[in-house]
Amino acid sequence: MLELSIGEVSRRTKVKVPTIRFYEQIGLLPAPPRTEGNRRRYDEADVRRLAFIRHARELGFEVDDIRELLSLTAQPNRSCHEADSIASRHLQEVERRIARLDALRVELQRMVDECGHGRVCDCRVIQVLADHGQCAHHRH
Amino acid sequence: MLELSIGEVSRRTKVKVPTIRFYEQIGLLPAPPRTEGNRRRYDEADVRRLAFIRHARELGFEVDDIRELLSLTAQPNRSCHEADSIASRHLQEVERRIARLDALRVELQRMVDECGHGRVCDCRVIQVLADHGQCAHHRH
DNA sequence: CTTGCTCCTCTAGTCGCTAGAGAAAGTAGG
DNA sequence: CCTACTTTCTCTAGCGACTAGAGGAGCAAG
Image 1 (tube, helix red, strand yellow):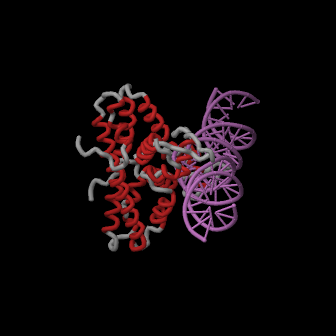
Image 2 (cartoon, helix red, strand yellow):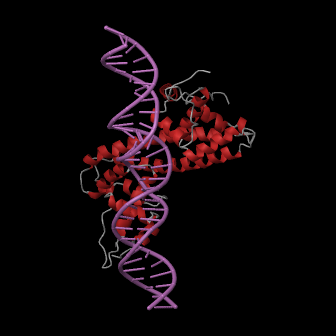
Image 3 (tube, rainbow over the protein chains, first blue to last red):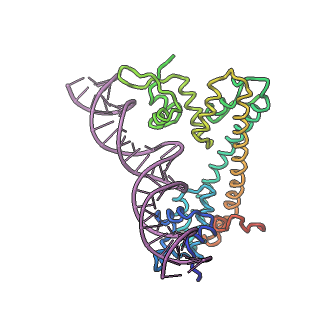
């Protein structure tokens, strides 16, 4: 079982050193044993756990979600249902966001395309953003 | 020109009262006139501006971006030329954001799809998250 | 005139980091 | 062994964008 410094773990997982310590502080990563000189010593399991955390964060999961997902992995014989619902919830949110951004993209594109003829007052970007979600850009 | 209380504005825009005051504090929303009794009095223009801010925030724009977008609407007779670079920059940003969200959507979708309602040890959600970024999900 | 709501200001807390100070421990060269 | 450099340690403070709470004042209805 090889021993890894915090810097080495950071290099392997691409998680910054202070962030690793922060995750320990908030109880996401267990406090590792220390050397004589008080340095943290990690092992492969820590690296895997940290990689998991990082990937989940990148996908937009909140720390509490991750805590829940991690606790699921700790009891591997339970039903997958909870992990599924966390992911599904997240998926729906992402889909909503894409739809809104796409509406905005269309309007920004239009604005840039039509630049030179019109003025800002004709711009629909503002309407799209100002409208309450269900935007009114049916005809164009 | 009807006069609206902060609570009424909050109800109309779905922006919480303290958040409205916060936006005033950081200069995103102009400080409205006050009544005799020191209450803020808003009008329809404020409501529109706030709705704009809210939707932009929901789409993930930072406050500084919104400040810039708002400055576009402030001078509607300006030539489109100046606005062009701002709009283009935002368009690129929006496109990048959509691309990232879409990659995320695909991954989340697969996670949910492959969660065969088995047990946690078989759950793709957890496996995908545990994998190092370039995950090994080629065959499925 | 009292009850109950809204509003006021102010401070402090949240989340998920990130940056900096100052000190100690480890490492490589001379 | 001494020096210089790098890594790590702890601790505190800051960020963005809010959110929550205390304590007080305004206002409308009964």
